[in-house]
Length: 336
Image 1 (tube, one colour):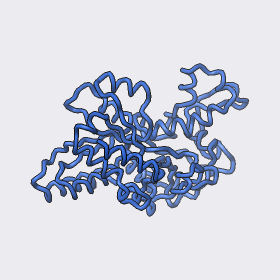
Image 2 (cartoon, helix red, strand yellow):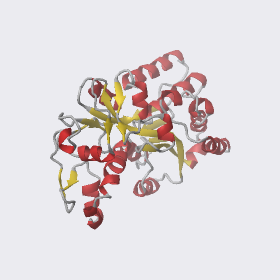
Image 3 (spheres, one colour):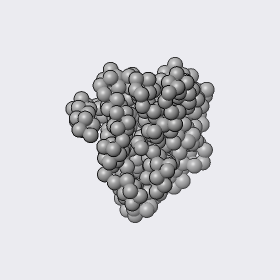
Image 4 (cartoon, one colour):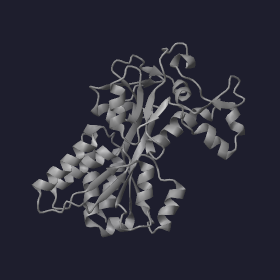
């Protein structure tokens, strides 16, 4: 879902519901992956409620946490979208600035998907092949040390791969999806290499959680629609996006199977697809109690009509969490 389209939608809702304020009392920031799901809920919530229109910004999980935990109460949003868990140091910063007792709400599952243009026939990779393509540092021939990744062509990684330039588009460092890439694609392979066992904590972070910066990986901010656009126009490029962007653009891009597993709702939800993850919303317990509009918005978000197996949000790519999880969250919200 493109931002321009979302902005037009919000403007339209404002014109139709003229008695409401155009400034959102509920302000949501964070993950670009969760962004289209929250926008969809905001549209439905505004169309059926007399509440003010929620404002949603997809600026990346890391950037969203910084704003959400800002010491300035005049700019702090009420809700955070996140494609990863909040780290301990981020939670401490929140508490330091008066945002304590954060409530962590799992909205469902997602997969980080490697997409390709429809004319790109390279539709199979292994975990190790993708690691070798994207990591900044890779092991030398006898795995006794790490060296800067200078690989330019896929065929240099494996002779069975085409002799085409490595070109992978993906999110920047402030994105939660980037953090997932660092962990699932780079770190999970790197830690199996024997020389990684002797690394200090700082060196492990450097050699086992770094993405190449020599042009093989091209940052597109947290704009997954831009990644889709770049990949769809190329015969050789790939991109790393959330699963919903594959579903929404299946007429433009295809997926790459990892270890022969194609990303699907089933393979992501049962964990057989190796790059599966959970998605979250965060709010403080105090604001959930004191802000009735926020509470009603969250009730809509966690309703079966929204994130159930046949909900309007799952229809655009969110993979539903287990029914028991959804019931527990609804019970919690109804007590507020």
